[in-house]
Amino acid sequence: MGEFDLAPLIQYSFAIMAGLIAGSFTTTLIHRMPKLSTETAKGDQLSMWLPGSHCPKCLMSLKPRDLVPLVSWALARGRCRQCGVRIDAMYPLVEAALALIACVLVLTFGFGVQALAGLVFALCLLALSVIDARTLRLPDVLNLSLLWLGLLCNVMELFTDLASAVIGAFAGYTALWIVMQAHRMIRRIEGLGYGDFKLLAAIGAWVGWQDLPVVLLIASVSGLLWVLPQLIRGRADFAAQMPFAPFLSIGGMAAILLTDRMHMWPGA
Image 1 (cartoon, helix red, strand yellow):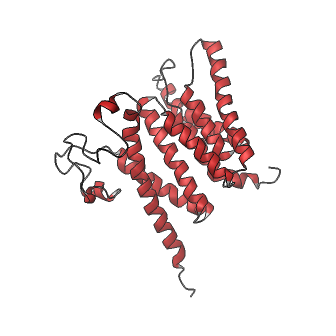
Image 2 (cartoon, helix red, strand yellow):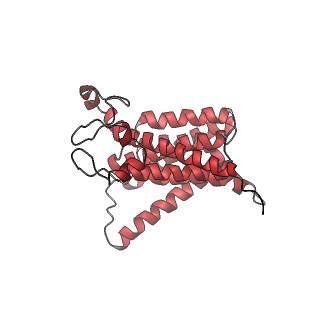
Image 3 (cartoon, helix red, strand yellow):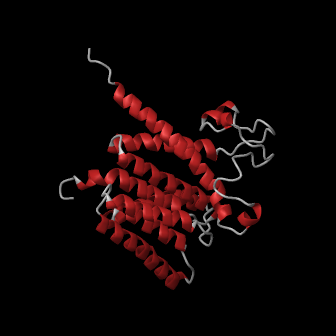
């Protein structure tokens, strides 16, 4: 019988811990970033770091035992220890999602810089997706940070070469701008927001222009699969705004994880 190799177990344990920590930070972004992008944050003296983590209902400051990702939520049975108010399920779901994504990244890229960069990419995409789903807004600071981080990573050619990344950023913005202009001409309304253009530009900076068709195809198909049941039930409102960031994010993560393999297919 062969000896059991502890290395993968240690690597995936670190990946899970890194994903949970990233998830905890992501929930902070989701909660505070929309407020920071408005004037009310100045009056409330709100920043990303101050005041410290607290219950939004009773304002009780959270102790270290309340800040352990996923575990604290489970031990408290999803409620604040002080006032008993239910804690938003978004918190454990985001933490668990990024822990899982971290493991998938290690499986795909190995335990190294690429996996770490991919986790930062996933962190930003998940934060933008939830914020868009809740507010129909995409904070510029997150979009632009994601774009510059993508270009910085590809200076080292972690996912593509720098020229492809720069062209990808330009092509991502331009592609959705053209779609928006065509939609405006046909229906006399804007079908996309400028935040979506910036998000696709940021994704293009990470994956390169070659993979943008894959991103758009997956985003379009996943968006259609989301809307289709509502159409069948007669609940779809074509005049209402729909967040597109979650679907672009699905396409972006798929491109990061799958396109290396697709490029190795015969004829690719």
